[in-house]
Length: 303
Image (cartoon, rainbow, N blue to C red; front, side, top):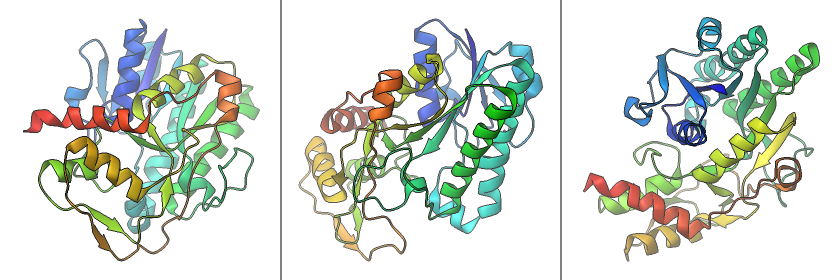
């Protein structure tokens, strides 16, 4: 099948592209390379340098794509707070453009949404039918994208699906960015710089390995499902425990530096993934220590 992946030169997108190629699909990538890296796109895929804020119907039509995996996004919560209009343009208008391109050729859309930024504070693992209380423009934009998916599905009787990802980590995540604490911790440990923990470190997240996320994306692409699915591990890991895993993998005895807690940061965010298990047969398979070790190994060429 011919599949188009937006954001396919980025962190998650490049892993999805590799997984699609490995099973024999014809893959086209749409990426403006503002964050993505050309070298992340395998030679077997076709790269179209294009900003999703502009329509890309012609690319989809000429490629003959039968499905679109829409991963292109502005993914930094802090940027969404400082530049909400830019965040909305990329994350809302970009999603509308993906849906319009898909509509014109009868393609299915798998949309990368978010768990933690949509549900807000969760005392227990959040389920898909729990209230959505985004605390940032990023979360609000992703929720709006889900709303557009639902509206297009009702209008045109399609089965688009939104995947609410947990905190995705793994190789190719930028260790010098503002998002992705696993990559940031490992990058600083590699460079011999102190790691910062904001607050007491008890805040917990659902860390899911990018290889598992790619596998879930392909399963959702193939499955006869619509609506929304959580994609995570169902396991809450505190920042303190995560740092200990990173330190152990790196063979470091460096202590983290504690700084003031950041205003508005969630104390707990973990996903209930039973619906994904039932509907697309997905369960995360990569233990945290294994995934962190793979991420650490991927950084070694920088030495």
